[in-house]
Image (cartoon, rainbow, N blue to C red; front, side, top):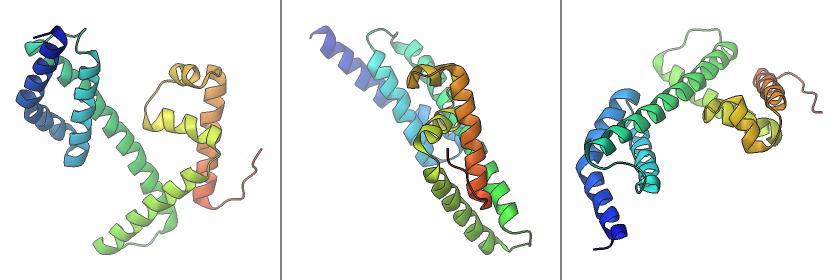
Length: 176
């Protein structure tokens, strides 16, 4: 068997033997099955792409746990930020007390409003906001990705947030 075939066989064995355990770990962090599945798949994909340079056996499991844990924590941060935006928008949208059914409808409407508003933010502002808030990249990494200065990234993130707030509050926008 060639080393490539051995590497492939070892990966398949690792995946089949460890996926369920990794899924339980990630589900414990994020509490959502679909998100846990996506995070596990991403962790295994990252391992697969680097499998020739990474250790096997228990060390591979430990590496996968670290990667999946970080991905799950990033997912949770992103979800908390989104929930905070929805909560703030919901409070602005209605100051009255609602029953559970109305609250769910309002939350769904808030989510749609935020998604729609984000899609209306100009691309060069939206992309930095997505990389910062959704992908959790630091300013320096975003600058490298977009080939702009770090200060320019900071300015664009600030402007994108301001733009999004104005869209959600219904204020008039000045588009440069």
